[in-house]
Image (cartoon, rainbow, N blue to C red):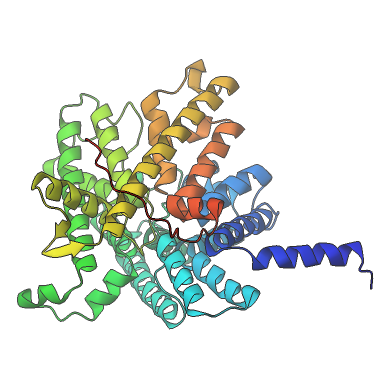
Length: 469
């Protein structure tokens, strides 16, 4: 029986989708969600005439990857429905995309073997939602409660300068959604600069960022934990590493920014009191690793080169596994530091907190960090080339290497901080930034797995030989 061309094409698509691996299906689903969101956001119902398909594509990519970089003014260029759509896209990117992918794949592929269920779990871990089925329902419940609590506090004590109750409620809800999902989108052109000395706004937004960034495993572990100094060891090694790393990085970022900006003549903290300096640097240390909110103007004129380099390092480390942020993850950084210490101590294995870390985990940490660094350098090189060809730069001057590196690291780490580069990028430069955001949100290892596909483990053994280091 001869089939029509349309039936043959549909059959090929069916065959192709059944052969997709989990990483490949994840990447394809992400692209489809971005495409659908672009069409919706570019419609007159959601945006003004200043937002075309390209501007909508960049904004939706930034929202789905919970980055926060934007080439539009959210409050001016998006209608109320458009702002609600943007908030929904942030939720999908931060909490829902990988879960939706997993559930869809179960229906599409129709296979429920143990190996495939485990594969789906690993894919979720790579993306950072941390669990399927009932677990994801608990994730949504926890996120809703925390976002709701933050919204109430901001409404009652934070955004008191907003007179309209509806506008104040929406500002409180939108910024809590953006903060918990580590997105960094704000409703105002200057982000949160107008609230830099408001302890309630900075405290709530900072807390939302940390709670969203530490991940579900840690949150769940803490909810089941009964506070007691003697019972701290009952927490899993993962939880202890995440909490210690998070606290340490916030402290290092705060002290580092205080130190670097203290000696910068044009620094943003020069004219502030000690309390104000602490408030600004603590918040910026928290948001630099994952979220992208800013309470001070960011540029090469207002932040020293040393401060920008410190922020680049914090963005590279990023949030924690199972969280809504990007970067190589705090646990990867902790394992690398543990491997360095064990090497200096002459140990054959990596030991952290009296626990031996499997070699496979150490290799994954090394591979993640190295591949991520190489990718960011390549994107920085490509961004410089694209902008040199396009001739796009303020006052006819090219961007510095530090500006290009900061922008690419901000995109890859899904942070969303900008030092004044994004507004002057051409289409090719913006395309480089979008690729960096997408790869950074999925994770470099998941993207490489999607490219190379499933490869059966080799049964060939090789002779061992030493290499001098």
